[in-house]
Image 1: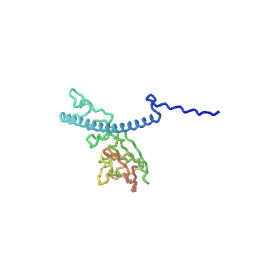
Image 2 (image 1 turned 60 degrees about the vertical axis):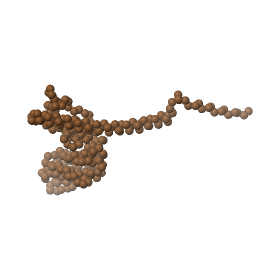
Image 3 (image 1 turned 30 degrees about the vertical axis):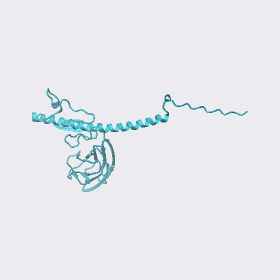
Image 4 (image 1 turned 45 degrees about the vertical axis):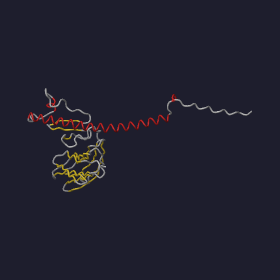
Length: 269
C-alpha cells in the first residue's frame, strides 16, 4: 500500500483582524522613537531661546523700575526688591521668577544668574541672560603640580549643555608663601563670541583681558607681595550658542618663592 502525502493546509488570507506582526511593531516603535527625539531636540532649543528672551525682558523691566525709583527718590534709601514691589503704586507688580534664571538686587545693583553661571553676573553685562534656560553646568578637570614651589594647580572647564556661556578656571592650592602671576589663553575658534571678563578670588591681584587676532588672553598679575594661599582665577567666555572646543586653550603660571621663579603650563582638555 502506498501512502499518499497529505496536501499542505492552504494559508488563510490575512485579514484586517490579524493585527501587526512583531517585526512591524518594532519598526513602528523605532520610527516613533526617532520622531520623539527630533521633537524634543527642537522644542529644547525653542524653550531655551524663549527663556533668554524672557530674561532680557525681565531685566529691562526691573532696570526701568530702578531708574524710576532713583529719579523719584534720589536713590535714598538704596533701592531694594521690597521698595520696588511694595506700596500702593509699586514700580513693578511682582519680582521676576523663572526656573531658567534668577534676577536679584543687591546694594542697588541688579544681577542675573543662569544655570551656566558659577555666580551671579551684572545684569548690565553683555550676554548676562545668554545661558537662561540651559542645563546646569558640567565640569571636567585635570591636576598638575608646579615644580619646586609647591603650588598645586587644577584646571577646570565649565559650560552649559546649551552653550551660550562658559568658564575656564585655574584653582590653586598653595601651602607656602609663594607669589603668582597667571595667564589663560583662549583660542578664538568656532563658538567663541567674545570675552565676558575675568575675575579672581584674591585681593591684591589685577585682572585684565587682551584681545588679539586669533586669541584672547586673560592676565592675572600682582606685586611680589601678592601672596596667594588658595582660590581661583576664572576666564569668562560668551559662546554665542555654539560649542567652543577647548583644544588649544592653555594656561601659564609663574611662581616665585625665596627669590626662585618657576613657570608651569598646561591645557584645559
